Image (cartoon, rainbow, N blue to C red; front, side, top):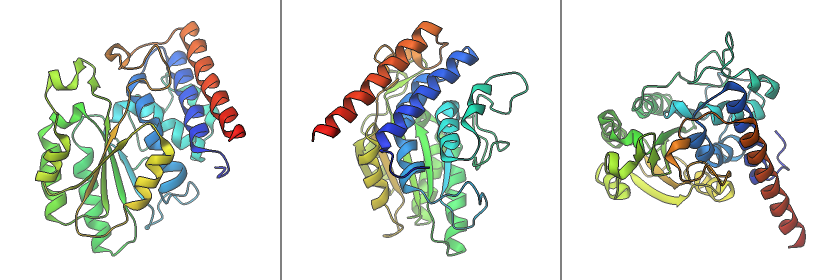
Length: 282
């Protein structure tokens, strides 16, 4: 990874790879992958301690993608971080490939397979307990979807995280407010999220979720201290970065035509050019 590359540029390149992957595969969970790109970029390219050359380093930060269906963004972040060649991303969804539609430990850098929603935070609690007992200076990050919060197991894990004082545990909610069947609040109301998590004994941070630089500052500030687990409610946009996908539930899982792929990549490239031109003039 090149630390001189702006996080926004890395996020844009990841978005392009996601679109290419889904187009080649003939389908994928593109909307939620695009909404979570900036979160993954801030973690993997700035805030998390991790090393592709030392996968089992005991003091590494751990990341769990509880919303495992958004694996396209996860694969892209891992590949760009150096866990496997980016050219391999085009094997996604191809018969015989190990790049499955949900995370698998066959891929370097993945801590646990996920798919059934509501399980990731429980595993994160267990990992955080183990690291605390072994006095390791590291953190565990669990990325969840907002629709996933309808799972009761999430709230059992939330109780345990507070009970054990896991200040080395950080939950992140990709709060794009849409799931496959429509608006989250119409499927199962999840408003007042901050108050819900506070009532379970968590420290709550609400932030813009599609600004990787802002997210990096938030994650950097969350060092183990204070005896409380933290939850970052990241307000995101479903399909972020591609105008014809943004805020539309239909793009939760959808195939992308070659024409749509070209249009999406052109939009992302235009956004990169605008950003870099603004930066050059500042």
